[in-house]
Length: 119
Image (cartoon, rainbow, N blue to C red):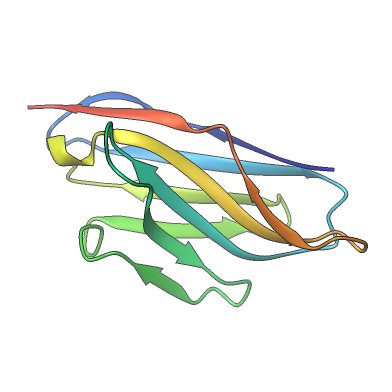
């Protein structure tokens, strides 16, 4: 069984920064793509950024130039550094990982962490 636990969310003023973490645990052979999604109230869950096991990254237009995704494979942890935060970044942020377990491969989700940006 695989678990993802996010941390690092909170309340910050516009222009501030937060660093989210996503720690994976369980029966893991390999973590392929790690991704961050976000969901604001009444809206769909959208991709923010993703990183492959080769450290190739992709960002949503809204995140480019402000957010940086990274990962530490030895720690099985992914990160999302968010700078110059705006009120429209307010959402629940979810970590997603595509994991090889040796038996069943699949996508796993964390429980989410709230990010609130005040104006």
